[in-house]
Structures are given as structure tokens and as C-alpha cells.
Length: 156
Image (tube, rainbow, N blue to C red; front, top):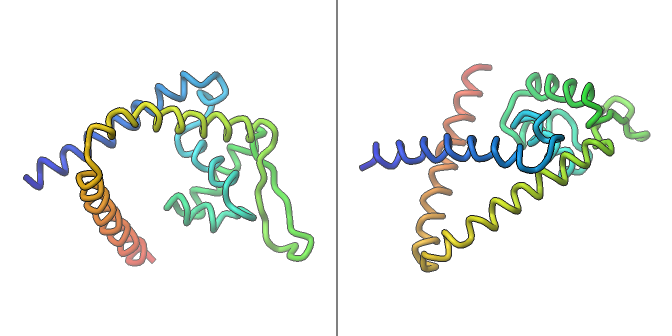
């Protein structure tokens, strides 16, 4: 049964990635120019106070080097620009440009549409079933996060 659950989770991940790509196309040409990770980096920059490489890397569970590469691509696409805090000239922060804000807004709309479409599915379950499902998935997510953190720690 555990293998069936894991296989279902892998399938779920694969299908959600495929849907994400198709929804991306549905929401306009601008999103088709951005990878999944670039869109989520834009999302972080739009949501985090004073976003920098460290905060974005922590939020997306990626390395700072990976985030730096993504940021360079986003700057080249004119979606993000760099700024420095006048009180701390050493630290580099990022803001969305008009193009970046459009990507952020469309990405947010894409997720809202996805959630709206899923409501009818989840409405078929009672509150207790959903609570149990949430508890299991939340615990599994924390287990995977701990495993990821342990691996990262061992790589240092």
C-alpha cells in the first residue's frame, strides 16, 4: 500500500507539472516565455519583503547559486531589477518591473483559476476526510523537507 501511495504522489506531481505548463499557455504569451522556476522566483520577489538571493533560495528550496542564475535570466527578460537599500549598500535586493508584475499577476491568476477548478473536486469530501488527508500530506512534506535539509547539510 505504501508503494501505491508513493506512486500516486509521483503521478500527482507529474500531472500537476503538465497542467502547470498547459495553464501557463492558457494565460497568455507572456507566461510561455518563463520556466516554472522563473515564474516561482517572480512570485517570491512579488511576495517577500526586501527579497534577496538568500530569502528567495530559502523560499524555493534552491541554492543561492541557482537563484543567482535565475535572477540573471529574469533581469535579461526585463522582469526584475536590482536595488540597494540606502541604509545597507552591501545588500542587493530585487523588485519586479512592469513586465515582472504582469508575470506575477498572471501567475497568481493561473493559481486562483486552478484552485477554483479544484473546489468542486474537494467539495465531495467531508471535513474529517480532508483534515486527515491534510495531516498526512503535511507530515510527509515535513519528512521530505527534513530529508532535503539533511542532504544539503551533508554536502557542505
